[in-house]
Length: 278
Image (cartoon, rainbow, N blue to C red; front, side, top):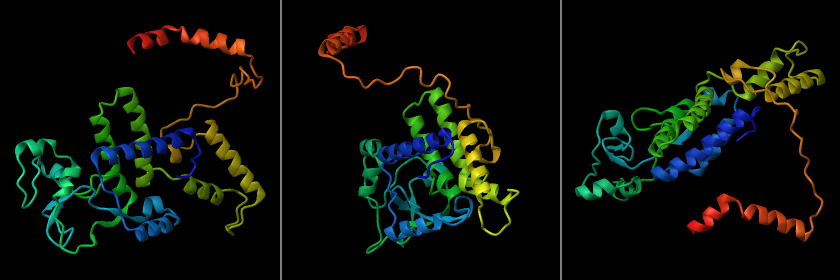
């Protein structure tokens, strides 16, 4: 992940990655694609406007397949398609599952008795998708990463205040993926192209570079709002006022001072109540 211009953007992508790991573990999803396709994705990611216009290899079936789609040479379909089709019962061809086992079945359990075509190399387990499709879903077989994150937040009963902030983060990522908002790279290119000193000759002069760095600094500090980059999000101005009221000390303490501090903190109500519970 590249460093973004503002703390808000960095927080958005950091939170997204952490929540995605929770989704993969909780829902037991399979996102494997051949390493050669990962290399291809890395190459494509360096193309201009790859985020909005490029296509990347991504696994089309993150959950076990069921009868109905042509994913492995035999007609199978994704478990997720049942959501779009209004179905709820888990069905596995050729497998008898009692009601108790159905209730406790996870995606991992479903995967153990999922049918696969003989000798299949999972040729159709992945396909090319736009970033918008990866994030928001494609067809009835791929729900999208952002809807899966919202499903996870609902699963853990996320509180409203946290959900509101996370929704802002996910909204930013969604708009970047669809091209509604530009990426920092696209904004920097446009800034240089529109600079008065730029001659269209691919030469970035010292004056252009300086003005670009000043603009980036102002965006990061919240003194310049760029709607095409952040949308409606306005960064609260960052200042040094009151930032260093208490200086960090490196002077060593003697034993009596250390013991006195420990004594004060260990007699706090929060610590004593915890000890009583233990």
